[in-house]
Image (cartoon, rainbow, N blue to C red; front, side):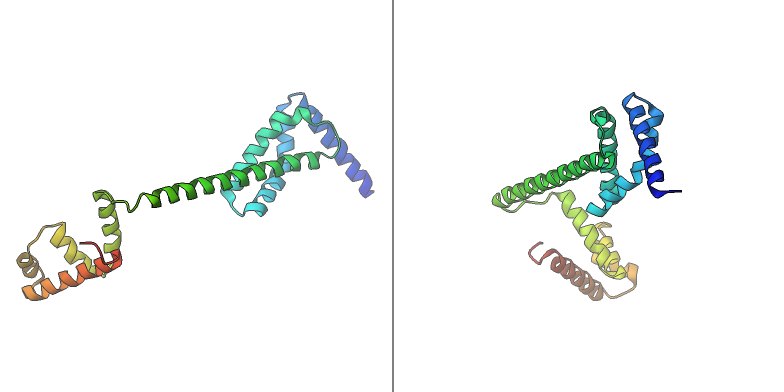
Length: 186
């Protein structure tokens, strides 16, 4: 079969599908989506390298396609479709740029206000994360001392070691935590 004949048949079929879509045919729109969804997704994915963003952009494109199919007046359907896709991607880039500028502005504004005092909950979360970075023995000892509120004597008895050893381990553990926090916190 002649290649031009195949392309012509596909072109006529595409024209019919588009005409069906313009008449409001759900089946026509489904066929159009089947024909172009993967190509458009791949287009977006190659531009941004992110599957979630590509899926969002594809969803936006399909909505635009549904809304604007009536404005298609012939010519290359692919050119028309990918012009819309390109515009959507450029809009996405502009939104990202505006968000980045907004965040940078907010960060500068916060920096001008001076250091922020952490709330008790924030400190607790930060300490909890730092405790995970200590060796298990030291972390357990500090948790028993401060969360379990055991005295040094009770800790020493629990661990069957001299009280001086327990004191030394607790103080070394606290020093490690201070160092991880930046050294200026009590």
